[in-house]
Amino acid sequence: MIDRRPFNSLGGANHGWLNAKHHFSFASYNDQGRMGWGALRVWNDDTIAPQTGFPPHPHADMEIITYVREGAITHQDSLGNKGRTVAGDVQVMSAGTGITHAEYNLENSNTQIFQIWIMPDDHGKPPSWGTKPFPMGDRSGRFVTLASGFKEDTDALPLRTDARVLGATLKAGETAVYELDGSRYAYLVPAKGKLDVNGVTLDTRDGAAIRDETKLTVTALEDSELVLVDSAP
Image (tube, rainbow, N blue to C red):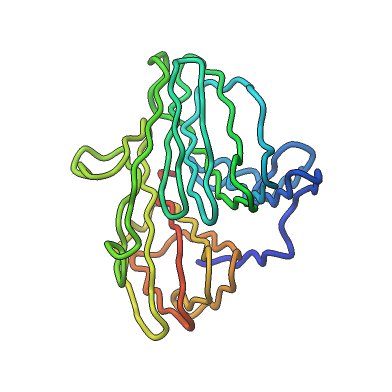
């Protein structure tokens, strides 16, 4: 089952400095049919104006993954971590028992991000943060795991949840295959381009809520960049 969720059907709000689209209920957007997907709770598609951002605010008990689509995001937190994550790269914050952080676009043009929240399996652990580059060329024509709660994914940023976040870049006509346990929940969004996923067409920034599938055959109908979350029910 693949439920296409067109970009123009998403909730959201334009705050001037922030134009936010929400794949699931978030803030003032409340849709009882879109409260999450398995352990995936939030997928926000944010465009942040230059020299603006999110001032310090707290989080707890959530795995927060930021995938930068364009520009760069600058992070600082109550642990003393500071870092700048650029387009194509990823940061992960495990909020744990509690952390306060701020995220700013200190660039001279818009920054676009996917911010993904996944509910953790482990509670009571100290918070942590990390960032890592993932060169586009390394995921050309194939899926690469960007963040993971599985020990075998040693090259990925660590998560405290039974989930993977994967990325791929496909040239027009290329196909990548992802084997999926039929009991799992997956959610896929093309950051750029147009895709066919098991016969379902997705345009840029559409969402696909996937379950009861054992294999995802993803074919690029034009040059594409995509993000996939594979999570527990």
